[in-house]
Length: 207
Length: 263
Image (cartoon, rainbow over all chains, first blue to last red; front, side, top):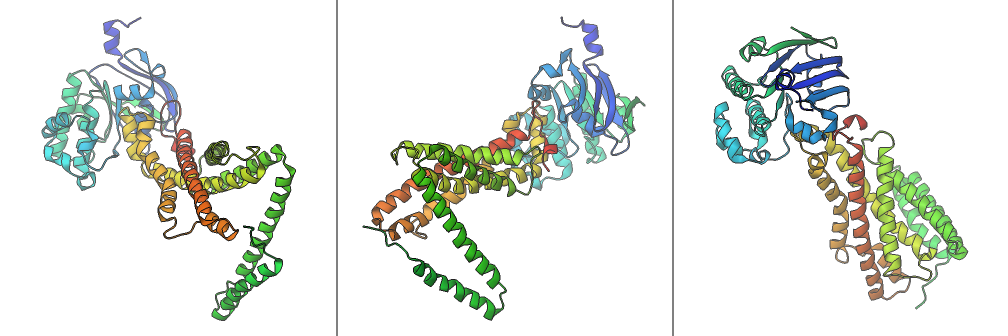
């Protein structure tokens, strides 16, 4: 039975009893267009929590999206809907362009993050850390996932680029995407209107 | 033409060359003479033992004994494949991948050859089956261990790249494809090199042996060509098998990259 519209909005992404290398159990709930910003000391397991939600590491617990249980869908379909961007994203082709199935769409979004579309023809190792981070963000956002799991998406960026990334994320939120992000910047959470949570000692609490 | 049978005296005369080597080692201070003499003695003893064993097995004409010996050879080759790579898959993953790869390669190509080209009477005659399995195994071992080693070192190095693809919804198979391709390439390169150099740079050992044993060069060459093709088949199967079997151990039902299973 489909959930009532009100219910679906209130709890779009529901994670319950997640338990793994980072401790737990962790519970997390957010609706469409909502954001959660997770802070905490390094090594507390913030990235591990995102990886658990993306189902990239073995762990206990359930996650559901829009009422659909994650365990009932193939892992690749889940990850297409709940996309994870690590703090140090990997690359598997030589040039930037080869990582984008739709080159035109990538080139269209790049100026929004102050990237020249010509960068697409560069070799990945010639790009700066900040350029790579922004390209990886575009790579993750373009397929329009329902949930974005972002690990310090502005960690390697200067203040100007940070503002642009936040603008882009705000647009995604307005379009109904839910965002779980790890950040060290408390003001960033405020600017995005994100609910703040703190992860420490294997416990996740409202901050 | 009958082969020129060697007498023990002939072998002793040849052995004098080993003594020359040992003498050179003493004079030049290479400190190699001891190892050299031990190796030469081992070589002679091991080969003589296997010669007598094979004579017995060939005469026995017992299919089960033949099968038993081939299985033992396969097991030893599988162990070798598993031991070469620096990295180990948990729960005997290397052994299982190595054994499956060489067993598959050897049985398919050996049975194929015995059933089509060579066709001895009966088809499982030990005199043909054992040497054929042996040469297939030797090459399958090489290919499988190169391929396994390449895959296991690449998967650690390329972790971020593989997980980036998984995180975007790629299947594990798709994310691993370039690594598997590279591993299989590494496993198959030696046979490609051997085939292109054959006759120009090297006279392959089997052919040389057959010519020395009295076979006409053209007959020997035909045998060698067939063996090369069989070996190409065996190395291909072994390289692909080792890479796939190992890759399967590196994932689970949720298409994750399970590097925790690699030590």
